[in-house]
Image (cartoon, rainbow, N blue to C red; front, side, top):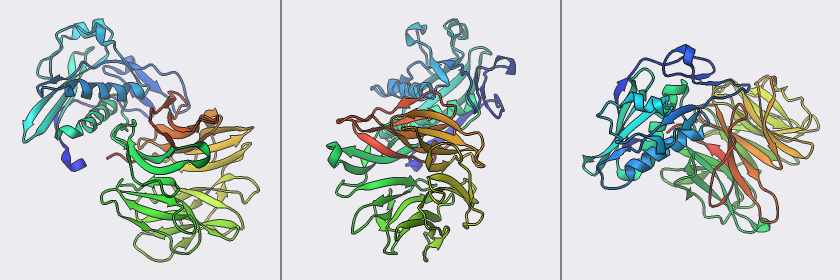
Length: 443
């Protein structure tokens, strides 16, 4: 829990950069080290050295924390690890200024040193320094105190601080994902709600698998998850409190409810309610009251997702004969189609930055994950394959997670990530099949 970590800023240098695209530099604008354009382009990963943090705790926590920090940064695709076999001994802790020439000699353009010490009362103090070997100065330094069992989270917070300092964008490592864990034979899969750190660590189950569950979604504060369950006579939308484990049925209208998602302020859940052979979108206040109708068509309107300011909703509908994407005001007015490409569009989700809408597109027997502007312009496919589906945004709006089915009689879905440029596609290594991921906000 957040209250278990205390943050102290030891030193904070002046901002290194300011740019609309991601540009990382440790010295002057003329020596920019990483440049990313939203529409693509080559990326030069920043060579970074992260020696194992020194440790006075009599265990391997120093090595483990520094390795998670390195894995986070390198996994983003923006950083390249300098081979640790090239490091010049001795590696010192945060209290000693590094020999910058030694680090420049092995190509390090950023350097992180750190230490782990006992802080009393069973607590740990984790401290790090980010150094600029080119200008021979400290860029930022911070320290944290926490309980030993929380060391992985501290590592993610350290990585977020470094990422933000070097890219000018918020990090996304101190986050979680909720998803549907799948097990058993393909024709009789057991599906349970599960939650994990963004990198697949600390996986735990939220439901027992006795009933089918789908489409979990986080609340803006990360305390609640809404999802669809086949418990009872027909599928219904539930709300689960992650702190207490208590859950409640959200829709009590007697009709099937599905595809829920929270409003940005967390006060409302928007979802689809089935009415005969069609489905329309309704908004339900968590403060009580009857659902408020937003669409009214003899079609299937579903998959609603709010814009980050809460003023608009993107959704999918087959009202025109095929699944396409539409945008409307949050009160249901001004409904307009925005997708016009070949194929069927589904599972839209608005970026936390507000600039893009991610979607699944099915065309010519392939499933693709793509993005477009909220007006439907600048459509780009990020990845395409046998079966890709269900995009979800990292809270910084620069990375998308989705699930991909490997196919075959013994295959199943897994969770992948790709950045908004369509580069750095990676699979999360899990000991279970996994689908329907939803990324949490920053904790």
